Structure formats: structure tokens, C-alpha cells
Length: 203
Image 1 (cartoon, one colour):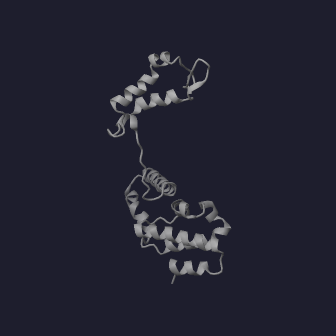
Image 2 (tube, one colour):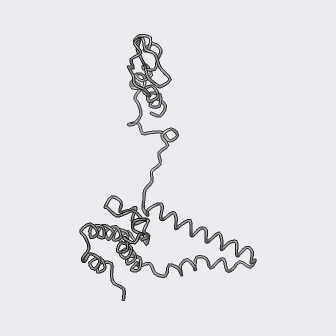
Image 3 (cartoon, one colour):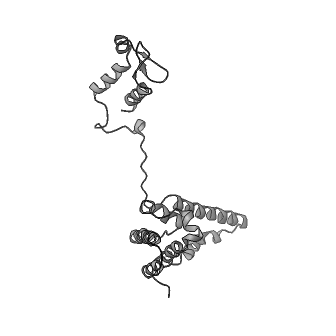
């Protein structure tokens, strides 16, 4: 009978340093959260990424000889996972391939299926489960009215770019996006004009 992760944690913490004990505790908590979420992914890469802010070492450190205790704890969660016979499930998913009569087509399908499984596994290691990724395209999708410039704000920025403003104060624009006075002193620092143009374009 295999030892539970809880009991193994207690055993692993015996006689080890405070630092290792804290790291084991952090790994245990991350794995427990995976279990509560019902996510059957206890790969070293995933646990390392999810536990970065808690002091869990990088994946390579866990794989090193010094990370033996960490690997044992992670493995105990994988072994005690409620999801059983994962290999059988994969085979069942590929049963349809055996129904292909043409040997060449059957072989090609198996190769592509294997590549797909390998790609899925890599993606799970690269992107932690339940990770939310938001991508914003401000230019094409548009922003909410609360983020956009008001008419008055837009006119104020446009005035700063206008020839009338620069002539009135005897300013000259440079290739660096700055405005300089007659004494070559920067009134608007480098990239200021570029920033204003971007604000007008996207806001």
C-alpha cells in the first residue's frame, strides 16, 4: 500500500533543514490546489510554475539530485490521483485508428496521433492549467468610453503638436520626439511627441 502525500510530507520533513521543510510545504500546498481543482497534472514543470511565488524551486532544480525529496512528494500526488489508467484512456482514444483498413493510412494516423499527444503534453508544461491569458487589441476592438480621451482632452493634445503652439513659444521638434527652445534646451523630453501621437491614435 502506497503512502499518502500527507504522510510522506511528514516523513520527508523529518531531519531536514528549515529551508527544505518550507519548500516541501510549498510544493504540498500547490499539489493540493491542483487536486482540489480536479486537475490531474503533477508534472514538475507545472508545479514549479504554479509555485513560483511561494518559493517552489525551478523545474531544473527539482530534477537535480538535491531535489529528490521534492520529486518524491510530487510523484506521490500523481500516484494517488483519482484519475486512473490514463494509459488505457489514451489507447481507447486511438482505437478508431485500428479500424483503418489501409496499412499506410493507419500508420500515418498513428504517427499524427502520437505527435498530437506529445504536443498536448508540452503545452500543459508550458501553460499551467487554468491560467487565464488576456490579449487586448486596443486599436481594432476599441476601448470603453471611460478610457477614451474626451473632446477637450484630444484638442489639448493636438494643440501641443500644432505649428501654432510651437511657433508661439518658439519651439522646434527633433527627430527624437522632443521640443527644444531657442537655446537648444529640451522643453518636452525625448519621445514626448511620440507618446502624444500614440495617445491620440489609440485613445
